[in-house]
Image 1 (cartoon, rainbow, N blue to C red):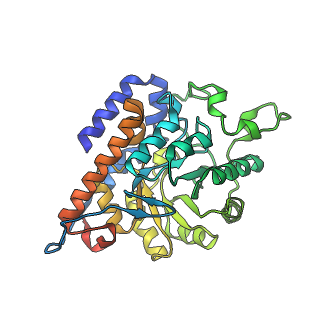
Image 2: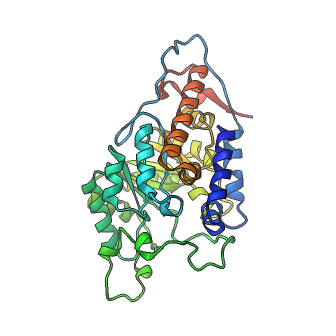
Image 3: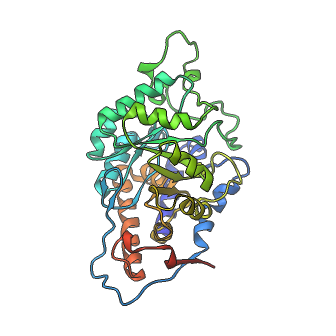
Length: 350
């Protein structure tokens, strides 16, 4: 899939403005974390099993919803930067591929419209904002619209410093109506700067995990975990899942790659809850490694955005289906009929 993804990446760069492309592609600091993301997956090698009946191979996933593939879409903001249909196109593409979808709270399409396009289960991503009433309203709307889980992002007490396009105060060619489409109805008219109300809080605690669980009435997945001890704390606070992520290298530069962090998190949790991972996954073999290590699902960020910019709904669906086909083929060659047949003995590091 690497060649196909590189083609999508090149097409996306051609059709997007320079500022939008910078916003999509850049990482924080010197972008070491971005550069190391895929290399960390590449250091793993497979130890296939033989003499197994792999005449039928399935990639189905049951995780806060039923999906045809464990390869899904991580939450990313402002899809109308990339395509006129925005998150509606992304959701429709995910639905066509039977893939998990996580809708960002920074969506440029209404929650209810995206839910209709998803035509099935989906999850909602939560940032805890300064005005708790705003996020409470969004969480309640998402639950009412059919979200089956909440994804609480906890690695953004501050926005990471990103050097490229740093001269732009808000490097987004979006109107406030687009950028604030889901929050505007819940903002106070008494605060002059509406953006201040949705700034993210820097005082997150375990109490916030409990609050999102109680407010939504849904399972909560804590996203942004890179340490085993933090994963245990999240579960003890009530998390129903843990998401290993370094925010696509957009937060703390030099943060450990997710492929490196995943085994520690899995060992600490010892199958006590599902673990999801994103970051640098570029083909079905990367996904196979993640699933063999013990992840329940593998999420994509930038590759899906490249597809959205290059070809809308159809391209999003195509990239997810092609990655799933590659995963299925690799599973068969590795001697696994389903993700349940995969285990850590099937991977090693070079």
